[in-house]
Image (cartoon, rainbow, N blue to C red; front, side, top):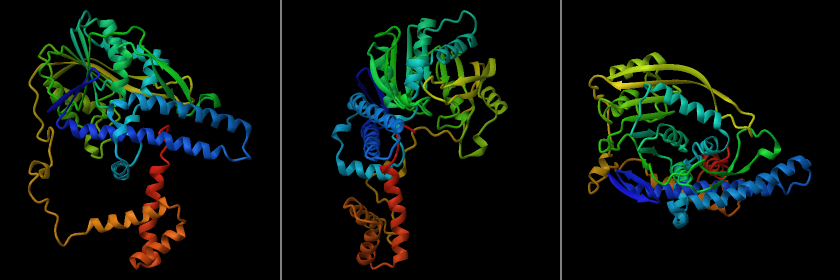
Length: 424
């Protein structure tokens, strides 16, 4: 496990240099996708026969996207996006499609620090009332801390010596650290289903009610592989985590069991929206409670209740979630799951000097990439579809149908990357 500290945040991963390269690429992808949105809006504003209301909305949207590019570029600067080579980035984007991971749960920033007072208070009160009366933790661990508000509110109300925030999202972790430490962070909120044309983008000033420069610890890591035994946590909080972490619940409970001592309490707060490709791991409420008990925990104060979720005043959208809360304490040993694998490393990485074993008579992937490069260069030269097909047939001596079979999916893939909307 390699560790580094950057701007007061501890980064701990098996290969920190590999993660830093990934964060640089993902940061540039986020910035690039907003740049693409700006380009598309500018093109749409050139249309002459457009309603006045639509033009006003698009102009505001453009203004907000341009502001977002400024603020997003600044907060992501420590992750090294400015030094990424164009050729390496182009390859990375093709091999890693979809929205930038930096923008996952981006809306949490505004719920936590702008308009979500009711939701924030409910979450904090639920954790506190689920604890035994009079319990005063000294060292709180929040796994999956997101934008940081629950950890902040627990610190304010329970007065521990330290609260530790753990998350894997670099943007949310950096923002949490800045906001809690007293910085006023400017970011643009892009509501899902805007409530009016004036709410397609809102410039927000994110700040904590009371700043703290001490008492908080920030760790960017994968909780599945991190060693938490070095600190004696007496309260573990898992908000909206057990159903989304890439880990079977048996393994997750075993991991929690290894943290702290017999007096450590575990409070869970969140839904049970398991979405594993393995249907046997999409557990019901009864199965969840059974697994937790089987893994050595006594469960107290369990409750299921419907709550409003992400109810932005700037959006028409309102979700209602059924949330499970409970307080659990170890009362017996946990059974290590047979499938538990921590920091598994591929065999070809364990033996990097050995042949990778690609069969000599296997498919020639390099030839496939030559076809891709040929087509993509034509697209960059602004060729038409028919021109691309004709050039492909001539260069590779292929039939028209063969050319269509190869070219069409590649064009669709390139356009998908080019037209990704990070606002949705």
